[in-house]
Amino acid sequence: MSYAASQYQQQSGSYLSGREIEVMAFTHVNTLLKTQKTPTARLEALSANQKLWSVLLSSLNRVDCPLDDILKQDLITVGTWSMRYSNIALNRDLPLAPLMDINQDMIDGLKPAKQAAPMSSYSTQLPTSGSSDNAHRPLQLMG
Image 1 (tube, rainbow, N blue to C red):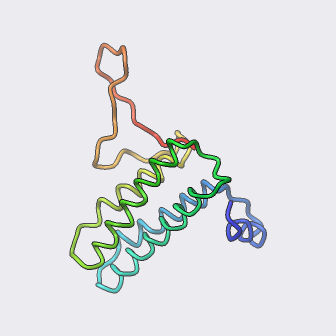
Image 2: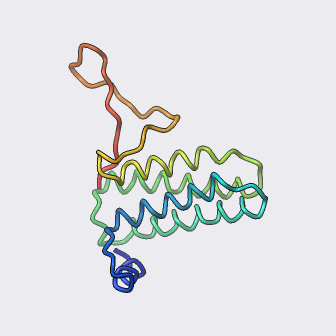
């Protein structure tokens, strides 16, 4: 957990896990991305998205990061793409839905399975092996 998060917990009296803090951060950024109506609000939302991913990428690159190497590399790839897309969207009128979808996927992966939100508009399902009815199961981030 970061120093800021630990200080927040100490001062607030509530004890949120790192995952809960990350869910709150992604939810906040998605709210900013969804509700932006002016160029200034768009700029603020995209900047917040970049800051969030910057903090997460810094955490992923720490020596004491507890995630396995494959998951870390996947998150670094997604985070780098999100930051690059946000940067381009600052200068062009690109849709923000891809950023919101990635952030929602992160929220879904961070929440316990019973609380995960419905799948976003992009399918991340694979066939279950050995299933006769071609059932699908969603992919979830672990960590």
